[in-house]
Image (cartoon, rainbow, N blue to C red; front, side, top):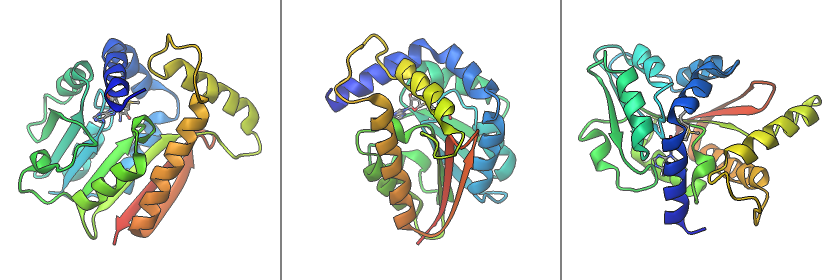
Length: 230
Ligand SMILES: C[S@@+](CC[C@H](N)C(=O)[O-])C[C@H]1O[C@@H](n2cnc3c(N)ncnc32)[C@H](O)[C@@H]1O
């Protein structure tokens, strides 16, 4: 599938399922806690500017806003209009949370925060959808710059001893939620492809960081990597 076709099908998929996705994104057991941990890993202070790439329906945005306070700035970027509308609705009470349509892989990102320095960048459950996840992480690290933080959270197969049944459920979820869902024959198993992309993204973040914090959540299925950049 070409890059533009996969990006169009991702937008069509998340656009169609925006309401259901929002419910899953906010209510799945273990996920609200994981979101708090990912926001904490951004190491934000009052008045900071934080960008969320692929913010979806905005489930992380209130928690980021809480950390930067009324003097800070939160910017959510996503390329799917219907999910952005939900993100906008759910954060309308804050005048310092901005939601904008954009491609998380299209550098330069000057339009993202104007002249503001970006203190941290968060991307949860996004890099698995990108054609070149390590390249995107490089661009994001360049955008944030030295001493800033980049945080990734992603679901991949677990290595834990109790993992086989969890991995089976994970595999089913990935196959069902990989756009387009009508495609029955994959050239490459989607859960293995996803694992490779996530490994590449987290590895690149480790390479670019002076200090790293790694955590796993939700029975070892979700990895959070936070890096303070060199
Ligand atoms: C699985 S959802 C995760 C949403 C959100 N980060 C969360 O944790 O709930 C992936 C999101 O990434 C967005 N996305 C994927 N590729 C993107 C890209 N290249 N540029 C902008 N958004 C992208 C999709 O539109 C979708 O909303």
